[in-house]
Picture 1 (cartoon, rainbow, N blue to C red):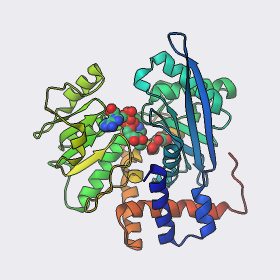
Picture 2 (cartoon, protein in one colour):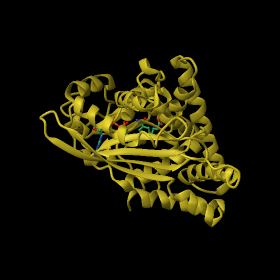
Picture 3 (cartoon, rainbow, N blue to C red):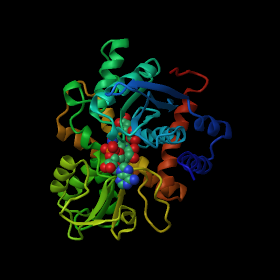
Length: 383
Ligand SMILES: NC(=O)C1=CN([C@@H]2O[C@H](COP(=O)(O)OP(=O)(O)OC[C@H]3O[C@@H](n4cnc5c(N)ncnc54)[C@H](O)[C@@H]3O)[C@@H](O)[C@H]2O)C=CC1
Ligand SMILES: O=C(O)CCC(=O)C(=O)O
């Protein structure tokens, strides 16, 4: 089942549990706007290269649409649609006043130079600048993009609309970004996992973790989990996978990975087949690369729209902090939001007699449905 079909199936199941009116259900499923643009840039060698960029704006009943921009060779309209819809439920689960959107460009960022990436990002921004904005749609980093990408979008957007730092989040701190945003998704994963383990009378310390992906989310999660006493026994990235049953030295692995553009060749453990990573015996498996891999029965799943909501939550803090919060305040507030999100999901599980994934979907869908009912007929929110 592709990502959009799987996401829509979860939505429909939640709508059924909530007893949503069928017309409302239909309107919540259909995206607000789908954008597809052609982006042609000169490569460094003077030849032209064309890429396809997408932005799907799913829903704005609870606030401006919000979500990352992904650079990956597998980006396609169905995937971006699914991810945009998930952002709508995710911001509602986190209870921050945003809707949902997602964007992406089908490209291999590792094969482009910095100046090619800059040109591609600027052309993409030129194509979508009149459809995003502080009150409509606020992009952020996702897989294959980072704070530098956001700085280019901000700069390009500002040429058309005047200086607009709030048009993106996940910016460099020097340009008004928030302390702690880089680590926020990984830190949110830690807080959500702590909340789940506490339900079972356990803590992070002593648990065995396996992590797929060692980029922004995976590397921060690994670092924070190992600081909290967890044992990270295996990690993979696009270059390979490594295992050490006594626990990997994450600081050394990070140094190796940044010097070698990947974890391949790390000598602090045994190289294993990346395909076997997902079946390594462990207490907690954290998929921090691509989506759509977990459906096995009998495994307790902390749903992504809760577990990885730390990034967008700190994006919201970035957006609203009038003067810069110190990192401790950011992290403390994040813990409050993540713990509250977990508690709210558990309440939905109890009242609807469902698992955590459906608890998160019913929570998110219910909040968006209430906001939609509250505005329908009175206010038209334009994008
Ligand atoms: N960055 C953020 O704030 C947020 C990210 N996410 C999600 O978390 C996931 C990871 O995002 P980032 O860490 O930001 O991306 P990233 O681009 O920083 O890192 C991605 C990592 O995944 C690895 N990878 C790619 N394909 C792989 C494969 N087939 N097998 C194993 N590893 C593979 C890459 O080598 C890299 O280590 C994505 O699904 C993203 O949508 C979700 C919420 C927020
Ligand atoms: O920080 C944000 O606005 C969104 C991050 C994102 O794309 C996500 O949570 O999946």
